[in-house]
Each structure stands twice: as structure tokens, then as C-alpha cells.
Length: 190
Image (cartoon, rainbow, N blue to C red; front, side, top):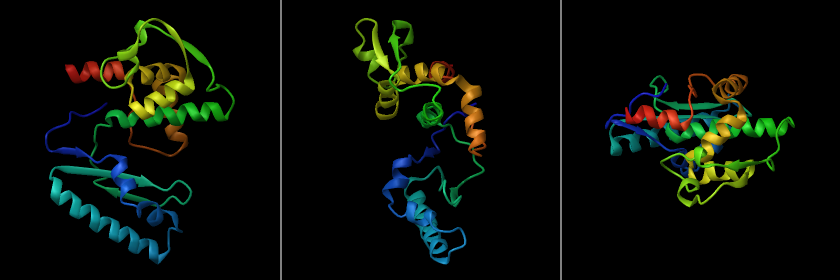
């Protein structure tokens, strides 16, 4: 379950890691190569510098899937995932598409009961029930961080059990994806 976020906790968005530019290069080589070890050392120095400027607790975790190379900053600290959990739903959905059990062109009827408060545009632009494809929901969830699209996809991919099973097959541990956005928002509101 997510931990409360205090004023001293800062979650560095994945975009910061990508903007540093040398993260993929530092992780993509063979695990025992000396140049990559130097790259990882430079990455550590850069993060140490950034952490000093923002204060609080910063957490970063990056794994290069093909080589298994990893970089972590404050690995033992558990951070609330916030909207980052939406990526786990995308991974599960795309795995289902790959194995042929679901098609991105599948449509569902968007109903008022599907709408969630918070981020996104589906709830704000809703007029009346309409067809929407899983592809549109996936894009809306990832691009707009749409909470309504997220909870619809949550149901479509099989919920917590299916997502956690997918993470286990990818050897991703230490994450808890145990409830949809509606319940996360309710918990945050007390």
C-alpha cells in the first residue's frame, strides 16, 4: 500500500532520469565493462549533486532490461508510486495484446460511472456515453495521466492480481500495485 508523502519526500520523475542523457548508455553495456562502471560513477555523482539542491529524500531505480544492469539511489526506501503505477497497467495490457488475448481496437462504452476525479480529460470532456478503444484509453492514461482511463484499464487487464503476476514474471519486486485510482484517491482523502 502507498505510504503517505511527507514534505521531505521527493520522487524524481522518470523524465529527469531520461533528461540526464547518459543513463541508457551507462546501463546498456555489458555488466562487467569498466567504461560503464565509470558512467555509473558519474551518474552517482550527478544525482548526489542534484539531491543537495532539492533536499528531502530522492529515490531512483533504473534497470536496463536486456543487460540487467541497474542503478539505484535510496533503494531501501519505499516511496509512494503516485501515477507511476499507471506504467504497470500499460505493461500488463501490452503483454495481453502480445499474446493475443486482447486487441487495442476493442471498444468499451464510457459511462458516467467510469469517471474519476483528478488528473485527465475524460471526466472533464464527458457529455454522454460513447465508445472508446483500449488504444485511446492507453494513450489517455499515459499522456494525460487520466484517472478515468486508468481505472477502466485496471479492470480490462485483470486488476491487482494480474498486474502483480506480470511484475513477478519480469522479476520486479518491492512494488505494490494493489488498488485502482478510485481507492488511492479515497485513501489519500482519508
